[in-house]
Image 1 (cartoon, rainbow, N blue to C red):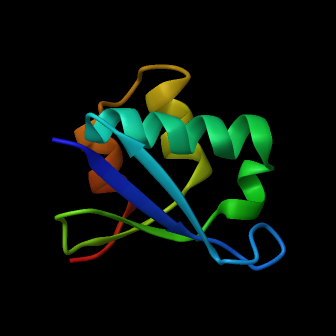
Image 2 (cartoon, one colour; image 1 turned 135 degrees about the vertical axis):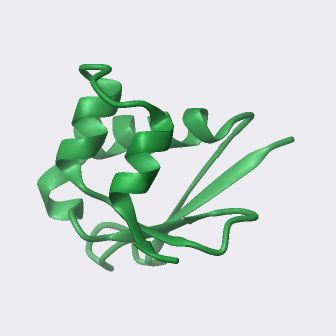
Length: 89
């Protein structure tokens, strides 16, 4: 099953106001978001941008620190990351 993540961003980052990530697992799309945020953009500028995963009614908020702890340090799991950044049930 292919997973999709849609991140809502300011217009100065992307005129379409959305950035899409696709991958075979939720972890893959979150990893892509992490890499895009930390290596192609200023992750601090993306704090509080919201995102949604396909098939999931919850809304999430990008937060620099939890993504850093999950993907750079392995201190928290992907499930813990999603719990930490869940914005709206």
